[in-house]
Length: 128
Image (cartoon, rainbow, N blue to C red; front, side, top):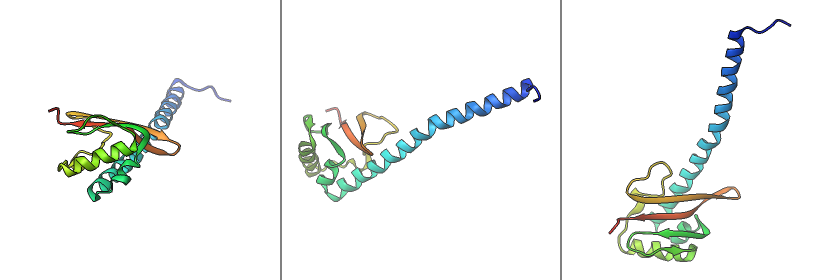
């Protein structure tokens, strides 16, 4: 067997590092896509007035703090609060629980329950 040269070792090491980084990054991209899909469902359910559907996207013991409302805990309370928010003309279809950016007073915590992403905490308010 021929001894490896420094260039060959360096090339092999670079390939190994690239493969390792790719293996670490790929799951994060898949998770982001999964969360974005749930986010799209949230917006669709809300815009259709399907508050039971919206609430189903939260964990059983989730906490939410929608604008104009106190903190609510649990799916039933979240459903009622979102229904009330809709009645007050809140339009979160432009806000949705996005995983990419945080602007203003907004916080979302996602939790993977078995194979599904669920909202565990959802806070968005106007600060008034």
